[in-house]
Image 1: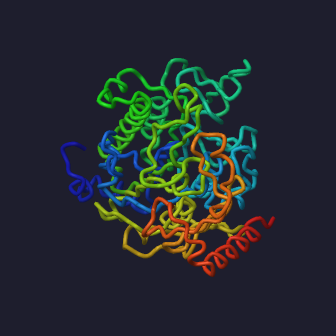
Image 2: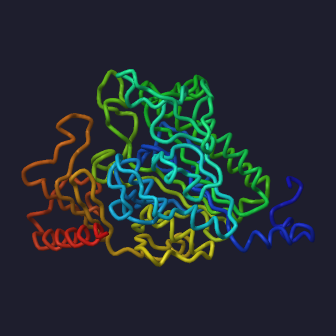
Length: 451
């Protein structure tokens, strides 16, 4: 393939049937990071972090400035991404409940069309047999179920009480890879799977567990980031550099295999950077990730918790070097992939997402007039430039930061076009709009909670 250009291969007699067969349906890849800050990519404005492969991915297609996760924490964000449904609707409002077995994922939508389906990395959507990746339309699973140490692959939630347990699996078989850095493992296994399935359409869900704590990185990556003086920031940069290298390996394989042109890639994060003390040093609030100009962090419905980096690249359909400022969200991936594959959406349930390929490919306007969130007692809506939140939390890493803000700011209205950092509360300036948006939130909550 290196001796031929892509165009030459497409026009070659032997190559043409192969390419034409593949052109009927694209390949799909979702690359998901964990707790990645809005500003923590070179293409997002980071001055100290180096992400050349992700920057190149952004340059090859569309980078979204107003892409939202549907939750400010891991499990509900992943549930929404996979089902195209708001977390409350698909039964995963927080990190604790597991997804109902009746939910249909992207994998379950594409597998009947002949797609090979594989997930590598963090699952976090249930451990029982009926919620296992292999029961949700994925042919292949290599990863863990909840939250793991990056080298020992042990769940650490109860480590201080002596109850830590091993959690690394190939499909339903426990496997052992002690000492192997998880980010490199996910890339390695994903590449093996891609090579084995290159001759058929595929859907790869590559769910990196970086840059989520514990803050671990191989020495060579720490040395690469030695220019960063702050050690906590340096570890996060090293973790991200390993992710970036993995993305580069995936892109190199697609290019060398003649698959890049017709592979539709989405890159994003499950939520914003965290300030949790368990992610910081010496039990102090974490400071490694940057949510840019935005207020709040993981767990908060201020922008810092839910506005995340996002890239769409599909060379066959999406023009390069675009910056899209339309309001979109992670639930849009499900119907977008369905439309691109020619799959019918399920007609027995509400799909909250919309096909946003026209937004990326044709500069269409957002299909959403407003989008909603509910998490940890907070509720929010964005309509155009207006963002309304009630009972917001700051999630700044302090105990007080996880309590609802009191006083006037218990109801907050911001003009994001003038105040992306949500510092100026306009609730008393525009009381009618506040009342209107509050009613909209109430109506949405009532509708989305219906059985």
